[in-house]
Image (cartoon, rainbow, N blue to C red; front, side, top):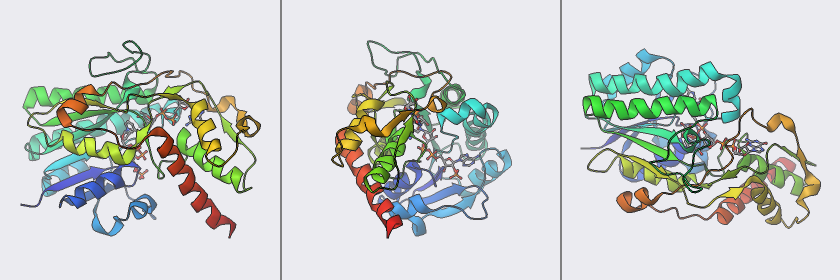
Length: 327
Ligand code: NAP
Ligand code: F7E
């Protein structure tokens, strides 16, 4: 029997990489998209799977649409990637963020509970739930949560309702507590892509500066293409479980900026970077570094792409894209 997967957030960054992986394993992939006059398939185009996905319409804010989809598709697996995922915007749009990120998962879990209880469910949880907490400088599955944004808070609810539906109703549910992961199709608001796109534009003479916020924040940055493999593996286990996924290495935003400029032969990056308070957050998460030992051991998963390679790959992709604008 062909396995089927419903992927929410299919047009974002992770959706296309996950769809490509599942299609390569023979899955029929349904991608949830909202109602748009003109949906943007550019990320799916980038990974080359636009025409292989079956698109279904719905919205994380519309419970009936999700109930109806689960009832009719009865997928083998659901990967819930849809979210208002930009931390900075969550401070200004806290209600919307909560509705999409907390109630959306509840609607999907209820739909699974009532109409398709054998469906396995993946919840896109996040290192932002840890916020200020760490154990000797790293975070693992036992680290308590102390979220620092409406985004982080909304994801803590989603995390616990995912655990609760496993414990209460015996559903197969997994939380992937993923640390920051990036790629050439990362949204341009996020700091890695903002920097790699900015560096490419400066190198090509299309921009003069990059305006940034807190350069001291530390993140554990990996490659999205590696992380979707961990998502898939979580739903193939004998028992449902929650996993931290990251590289175990962390870098400051400053190091990221320095590396990106260096990759195009610019050493005096300080000339091009302006600190702009509008990009600082009311409350910051200063330091995230995963201890992904459980995923290494039980999932037999390991990240393949290094931080250096990731940033260089993103800069190269942005150079190519921006060059097209100059010709
Ligand atoms: P992303 O690029 O922001 O994509 C999020 C997707 O969610 C978009 O395609 C968006 O649809 C969709 N969406 C938003 N609101 C929706 C709604 N009301 N109904 C239906 N779809 C909606 O995020 P990502 O980087 O791929 O991340 C995927 C998931 O992992 C998210 O849940 C994120 O919170 C979580 N996560 C990400 C990271 C990371 O570093 N990337 C780390 C940990 C956890 P439109 O295209 O229509 O706007
Ligand atoms: O910020 C600092 C900023 O927006 C990273 C989401 O995918 O990962 C992501 O959340 C750091 C923060 O990602 C700018 O203050 C400095 O400390 O790229 P980001 P994020 O907030 O870590 C987690 C795991 C998720 O789950 C989220 O969905 O960089 N920073 N200057 C800046 N950040 C941005 N965006 N822009 C700046 O100008």
